[in-house]
Image 1 (spheres, rainbow, N blue to C red):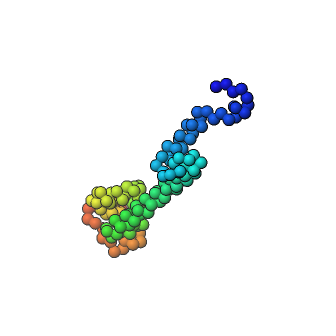
Image 2: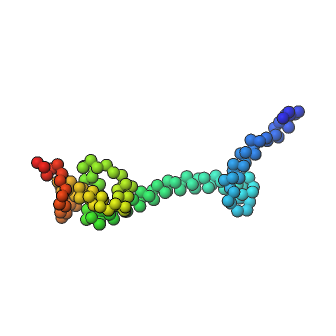
Image 3: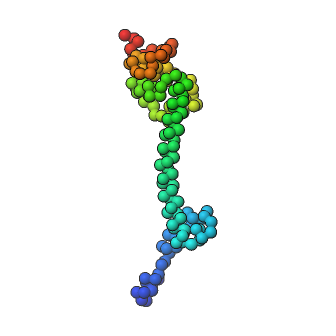
Length: 148
């Protein structure tokens, strides 16, 4: 395209503007009314939606962590061991499993989780941690401290 004057060059918008606007209009396609048709309004709404989406991803992570903590506390309560003691004794036993996987075990594989609570209970008794004075060491769990 050849421009004969500088003012015509400045007014030329070209294909770049079309693709830039079409990208915004694609993101605003499901809006209602002028929010989807007018570029000036659509760009405000799209930017606002993207900000909400960013905040929502962080909130989703926080919600999931709170859910895992609640479920882990409930599963430990079911096996009569405090959750903090359970986590501490697992760490002392070199069983390094994160909360998400522990909760998945508690929900989908209760026997495996019960075995972990038995190991944690035996280790807590051996190390003398708080909250396990009234717990019984389950039969069949052998720790290094018992071998001496």
